[in-house]
Length: 123
Image (tube, rainbow, N blue to C red):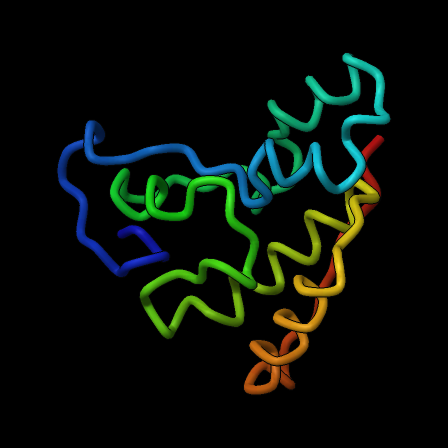
């Protein structure tokens, strides 16, 4: 099942691998100042389960390089997990969030009071 849209997937061709924080967003959030090796480590992150997520191709493509101020998963049940994973990824990789993104995260997270953001800094 694709958590973003709760779509049942029976064919792997219907899936895309989503970077929780898209590469362009990561670049705009500070990755441009990192070494090529560090950017490569981010792009190919496999140590944190939430950094790369298999989701339906249509939802991944609708997300594109948008942050939560501009795009959220269509499945309401995915909201809190998505926000936690987004925040954990940003913190893990020491990426910034602009004022619009911060405001959206705070507003969208209101119903997620029981959620906790756990992360380990990327090596």
